[in-house]
Every structure is written in structure tokens, then in C-alpha cells.
Length: 137
Image 1: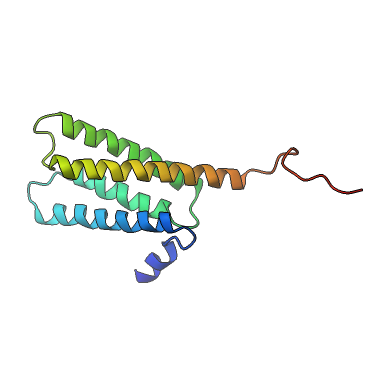
Image 2: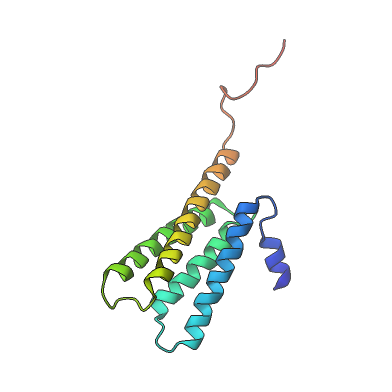
């Protein structure tokens, strides 16, 4: 397990590595709540744990474009679920301050995954003739 974490930890970008640490902490908090609180909703905390796990994996050094794009989509879905929980009375048992911090983390995750997705797509695309330097004759 330790080898898997060290191999998936982002060693090229400190910002992504920091987000991975935040996602691991949030994953642990969601898992702990699911295990210790009998009133915790699997639909709420399970989706949160899944989203943080996928975000951790998608922010690693070498992930596929599908994982990065999927992470963006799942984080945006989770933002919608947080919004629904905050605006509907009795829908969520999470305090508003915790939900606001969680929403901020998911917003940053989706933005970082989207930027990483765009960078990876640009690296994978072949250079256009306008981007290549002219050769000397």
C-alpha cells in the first residue's frame, strides 16, 4: 500500500501534491465519519470519499486524460450535491462551515484537474506547422 501511495504521489508539481494531501485528509475524514457515525448517509459521505479518492489519483504525475476529465466531472457533481444539501433544510447533517470548506476544496480540485487535463491534452497533441521552427536550408 505504501508503494502505491509513493508511486502515485505527484513529484513534479507542489501544488498538485498539496491538493493530494488535502484529498487524502478529506478522504480519511469522510471514511471516519461513515465508520463512526451511524446516522451518516452513505449517499453523502460515500460520494465525498469517492470524489476525494478519484481526485487524489487524477492529480498524480502520469494519469490518463479520462481520469483527469472524470475527476473534474465528479467534483462538479459533488459541488451540486453540496449546494443541494446546504439549501434544502434537513437534507444534510454536515455543518454549513464544513460544507463550505468542502465546496471550496471540490472547486479547487475541479479547476486543478481541468487545468491538468488541458495541459495533458496540449502535450499529447502533435505540434501544428505554425508552432514548429523553420528549418535552415
